Length: 253
Image (cartoon, rainbow, N blue to C red; front, side, top):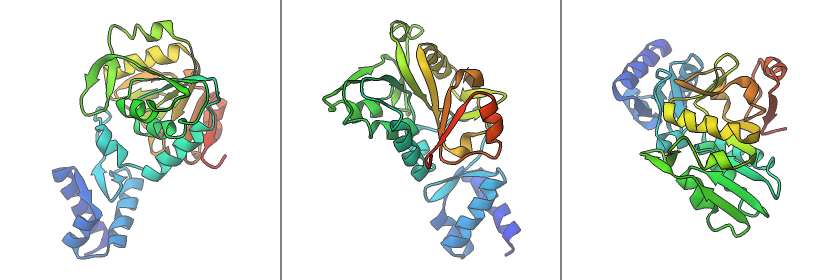
């Protein structure tokens, strides 16, 4: 079977099942796992799918939103390294927001030994990581639980945030582009994120490079409201992002 034919069949299977594993496809086509991983890499580069840890999912329209458990399986190494790099931006004594997200969760793991740090979050998993950190004051925002996403959407227009001042807000995104700004797939979540950035002196978006140039249903920040972008690698159009006033920080910088 030719490469193009195999990839067409992989895409057909994905459209039916929405998620596949390397092992499953290797057995189905009687080829090595390395061959399937190459197929998935090429198909991701052409925009047909998104690779996950051990497989792939179908790339869908902007309104589609993956649950936390599935998002955690995507780009694991990049997210861990981005989280570690972003944590270096946090200083003792800071008041920060850790927005709900799988990359921001990695930031939390590197903050447990900080001194006189205040962390505001709406993410249960982040709160669990930091609740035993004796020198970290933890503020868990209340609201409506977003099932399957380990977080809450603050109720009543985020009234608690209206009375808080934040040094740095670390924000997660579904996509970010120079034209559409920072976006997520949930309208109510976007509204709560807008409230957060209104009260932050510095807005820092953390995401892997697969999110750059993409968009999603609801914008929560224009690009001129984003101060810094922490990611795994610089985009080819890095100079344009910098000209827009956004500082670019990578895991190697």
